[in-house]
Amino acid sequence: DTEVTQTPKHLVMGMTNKKSLKCEQHMGHRAMYWYKQKAKKPPELMFVYSYEKLSINESVPSRFSPECPNSSLLNLHLHALQPEDSALYLCASSQDYGGLMNTEAFFGQGTRLTVV
Amino acid sequence: AQKITQTQPGMFVQEKEAVTLDCTYDTSDPSYGLFWYKQPSSGEMIFLIYQGSYDQQNATEGRYSLNFQKARKSANLVISASQLGDSAMYFCAMRGGLYNFNKFYFGSGTKLNVKP
Image 1: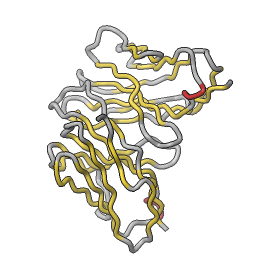
Image 2 (image 1 turned 180 degrees about the vertical axis):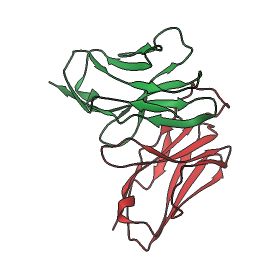
Image 3 (image 1 turned 90 degrees about the horizontal axis):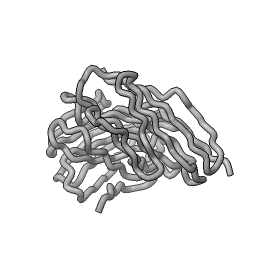
Image 4 (image 1 turned 90 degrees about the vertical axis):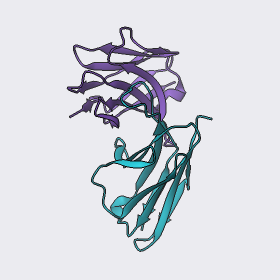
């Protein structure tokens, strides 16, 4: 199983709503990532979890709150978002062998988020 | 800091011909990994090929090959015998060195259109 599964695929939410994005992988990967991608732009790194601990936060606003309940699951909790947060949110995972470069990141299909 | 540059926003290629997508990078780390991803309009990032900084030979994966010129800091993707299904966005990425190995940095991407 080389899949990263993201749910939901599409999400429309109001600026006062609270919602969560979910990501799951069963490849035994111990690094998991959230990326944000605007149209016609490259993915921008938001958060990295390594062995279920948050290791990188790229100065993301607090209205985005990540959570890693176990080694297979990654959530992104959304609260009080702005219309400019509308984007494709991609989850990814990779092996984390402490310095080895030769392991690619596997990506999910993403959640297309629209904030109204 | 690591930086990836893709200077071709868009490329056209005739079906069955070869095409080269350019990528240059900048890093002070001696150990790094270079990756190419394909992103169709569906949104999923699909891993294509990997090149390590210490690899002596250029990587190949089926119709994909990587022209790695370390001294020039370039890692161009060559797609042979283009197919209509190759039409997509292509991103060059780097896994960020010994102290940032869980960061994948992406270039701005190249939109490839394969003409019948």
